[in-house]
Structure formats: C-alpha cells, structure tokens
Image (cartoon, rainbow, N blue to C red; front, side, top):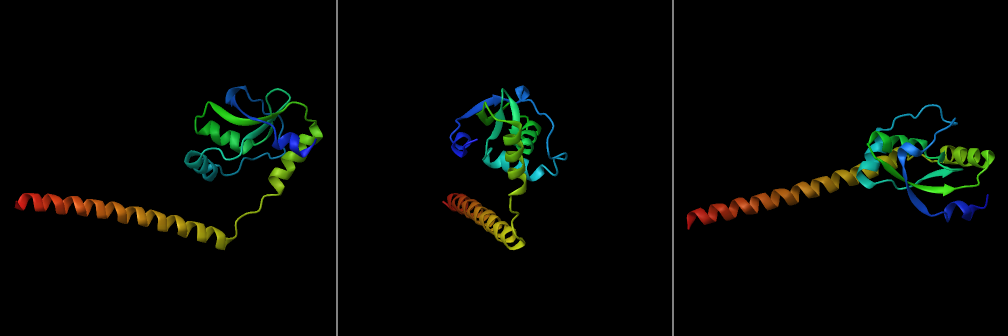
Length: 141
C-alpha cells in the first residue's frame, strides 16, 4: 500500500455501531481513562482506520474510548482495498512505534497545566474581589 493512500484518504464520519471489530493483535485494551479524558477534552485527534467495508484496521483503543464516552459516530479514514498483511503492519506499527513521555516531560507538562489552572483561579479571584469592592462602595454612597 502506498503511504499517500492512507494519509490522503478523506476523513468521514462513521456510525460506531456499524464498525466491525475482528481479531486484534492487542488482546487487552489497557487503561483507557487517560485516553477518554483526552478525547473528552480535545476531541479525537487521530481518526481510526477502517477497511473493506467497515472493518476496523487501526484504532481499537480510540474506538473503545469513544464508545465508553457514548459517542454515536467517530471520524475514520476508509481504505477499501487493504490486505490482511497491510492491516497487520499498520496495527503493529501503531502500537510498537509510540514513544512514552519521559518522567521529565510528563512533569513539565503537568507543571504547565497547574500554572494555567492557578492563573485562571487568580483571575477569577480578582474579578470577585473587584465586584465585592464595587458593592461595598455602592453601599457607602
């Protein structure tokens, strides 16, 4: 399969209950809470891949997460003529070639999230303080 066949396939919206999941290389889904949180917050960043009708080729964890979030549809790239060998190669690459964040990278990202939350809380506190001050000044007049 040519690389651009997959990357240039248009993204379409598919009914989740129409997707057929056959035997998968990954037997356990693992922890889905983090992925579900990400999808609920950001949406689905990478569409699933389907082939030969509506058979899932790649994205089982994304599909399962969207099901658990009660999504009715999911973005997908459709590749109609994909051999079993091509599907297995994509599935293997997708699961093997990921690089986990280092402890430092995770901590750095979490610190940025905390700083963002703190800045938002401080802004809300300033708004509340300003409103209280205006009410107090209005009562004095």
